Image (cartoon, rainbow over all chains, first blue to last red; front, side, top):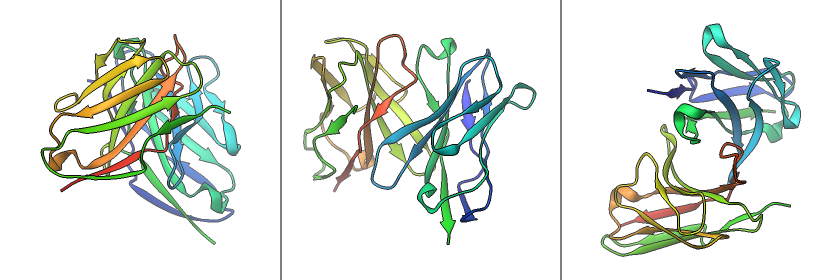
Length: 114
Length: 113
């Protein structure tokens, strides 16, 4: 069955430090991959997406993610974290096998220390 | 600016009550979705609709029903609320042909006592 795993439930980084959030997926075909962010009290917002092509994708707010097929991973990165990045981050997978539906990971909550 | 609104941010209901959660989008989107969000479980799809009066079950439809009489409005109904339906409920919408890039509302936190 298709699934998404985010191994880290909660991560704390210092402001200005680099960030990497991990995402591993299980999918029987070429997946479509997404990262969404949920700021406190708000709905989810799409950060970036991968459908095909270049395996390094750029998103909004200075985020990027790299698709590594051999590792079944789609990790999210940011070189320098800002306090406003504190939020919950969700990785998701979709594709034809899913009938157009998204499967979400459990989420990683990011805290930013001043 | 695209917008998805949900009728209530917080709702408290009693066990056995019939509960309506309303969602409205102003983007003329064809697809609409209802999820529930629980700590440690991420988002799970309850129902989705790809057109007026059309609906499809998601991964956890039991105990829920939906209604879509107008394109912009998608309602989630709990016929007889139970305590295990205490959760955050999120509505989303997307354009036809792209079910992955979804726009989300702020959520309704429902507590069933």
